[in-house]
Length: 296
Ligand SMILES: Nc1ncnc2c1ncn2[C@@H]1O[C@H](COP(=O)(O)OP(=O)(O)OP(=O)(O)O)[C@@H](O)[C@H]1O
Ligand SMILES: [Mg+2]
Image (cartoon, rainbow, N blue to C red):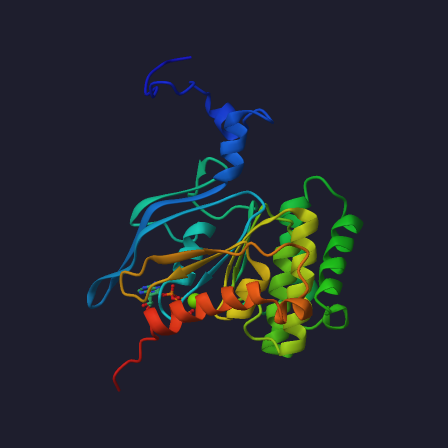
């Protein structure tokens, strides 16, 4: 083992030890605290009109098992930040890490629910989910097992009846639910969701929010979710990351949501702590950082 690059007082760890620290050790506690790390990230897009600075100075650490929401006005860069975490975009500056490894591309450890659902149009709902399940579990499980996982995921989002339909034959909300089923069926360590419930009617939305609460309590998944919905952010999150308006958007404030779990939406509606949190988010969005209205 070499001492090159050793920081005074820091133990020298091999790459293997850094990636999988011994349980109960100090390194392990740090690893769990800083499971997903965005370190000074910025994103500049090349456009016809020149460089467009979408994001700057983004610093965020998400602990293992934590649920974090990203909230901010349209165009502030929420999807861009999520795409950086998914590895679909590389940052122009800074770094992103998951489990101590640099994010250099998409991986089965990070499941993504896209804002525009991104299903393969020539495949049925079942096949769209099955494809992802096979990619993750194909090497270790037999076909009946993979099919059962696929079926269970479709059942969870209430779509068993539409399993053989193609995306072109179902509604926008149903397509979104297939996207959610696909991501959940992969049982990813990190679930990245871009306005997953945006296109749904209020009842389906509430049902799937409750399902998500149940699933993440069971699987201890780490979740980063984009939402426009203040109530959804408070109900689901451990922290709410509030973003300033773009261009060159960044994190404005981070609000800790210390409401006990399990959370009950009906009981919370009259809870003063819940209402205070809700007001804080609304104040940020509508007093401090008003929506940008483009001149006609
Ligand atoms: N590939 C790209 N090329 C150039 N500009 C881009 C690209 N992707 C995003 N942008 C710009 O970056 C900014 C942030 O976009 P992004 O889609 O991340 O916003 P958002 O917060 O997700 O918005 P919404 O709430 O409407 O989904 C916008 O000004 C957008 O036009
Ligand atoms: Mg978006």
